Structure formats: C-alpha cells, structure tokens
Image (cartoon, rainbow, N blue to C red; front, side, top):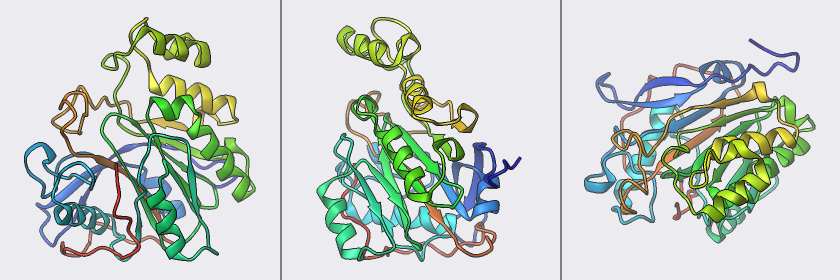
Length: 304
C-alpha cells in the first residue's frame, strides 16, 4: 500500500534470483519487491548460500578482508549484482571500521574521490548518484537500509558501537535533509543480525544500553537487543514505527544460512546488505547474465 508521498510501506520477503541461464542456479535474499516495482530501488539482504567460496567462507562470502581468496570474493560480488540485475553498475564497498562515519556519493563527486573516502573507512553510505550500487558486509552486526521517497538510499553497518553512536539515526536524518523529506517519510529495513537471546555481553554494556535506549534494549543483565535499541533511537529521531521493517532472523541461531562471527569463533565470511536504483521502468531481474570474474574499477578493495 502506498502512502500519500508515493512510497510503499516496507515489507521484507524472500526473493529468488537466478544468476545464470540455468534456473537451478539462484540466490535467495530478503528484499522488498513492491519497493522495486514502484521506485526502481532494489534492496537485498543476502545469506551465505549460492557462492563460490569454500571452508569457513562457504559459500557467498562478500567480505574481502577475512582471509578468503580475493578473486573468489569478487566473483561472489559479481554473482550477486548479476542476479539482481545490476552487474553494469559500479559497486561501492567501504572499509568498515565499527564507527559512525557516513560517506555520501553525490552527483557532483568524481568516482576517484569516492574510492579514496571509502578506503579511508566508513560504516554507512548515502547514494545519490546513479548508476551506483552499495554493499556493506556483516557477520552478526545489524544491517540497515533506508530509502527516501525520491529513491535516494542509505546502507548502514550497525554493530553495538555503531548503535551506541546513533549511526542509523544520523544516516536517516541526513538522508531526509538531503532529499527534502521528513524522516517519517523514509522506509527503514533491518536485516538478519544476532538477536538478544544469543548476544551475551558484559553487565556494564547491558547497563549502558538500558540507560541509553530503555529496558527493552536489554532483556536481562547479560543480553542486549540491537533491534530494540535501533527502533527506539530511530523513532526518537523522527522515524515512523510503521515504516521500520525487521527481518526478524538471528544469524547466530542460523549459522547454516548466515555468517556468524560468534558461532564461527571469528573465522567466517560476510553476508551483505546491497542496494541500487534503476531510473527507468524496472525489468525482470531474474533474466540475468552469466557469472564472470569482473567488477567495476570503482569497487573498493576493502570490506569488513
């Protein structure tokens, strides 16, 4: 259902996308098909299946700084982009630093400047430029994608440090300001991440969450909820609760489907949060091209 501003209300569901001529070769991602059909913005929260990596990185590892073969990671990234129909787009992948820095890819900035800033480090990207796709990488931390009515979008990495630093509300506020809308007009999507039942922390950190975000953010003295902290902080900064869509999947509970830093004791790949926008009438992205080794030169060499 569309609101008065024309942006559909968010709804995450599993979509299946072929990355070759064979229907048997596909990726499954959490996406919002209605959003794509109405705005051209494709969002995707990936799992770990459908790639080329092996061992602890099997198989759709998208992180290039975790010990996997770099060329294999590039092929995995291309496979994702091709499956979603954006293999012709340059891919922006920042060096994630568990901080609160946001990078804005504007229409005016030269691509070389983007690469320098992405390599310096950022945990969020706002993309105004078309054609550019954004990818951030995760293994328990919360992934957040925000979309404004104009189709400008942000992709954010929110570990507990980023949550405490309010990186998600900062991205939402800046996204709204840059697109001249209200934060309440934007859709917010939260992908798979470690949930409170598996996220054991120190009592000191749990107390910090309670003091900052209220009791719902820490169900007991040794566990915290990233989604409840994010939801509270986003709403306090103007987000519409009805426009926050939570994937409601725990990465630690499902290590066969997602990478989990905790469950794999620090040796694992990274799943991703991907977003890109078409400015023309969307087409059937299931009719994608065959897999290759290539990616745009604008893609950063770094990913968490």
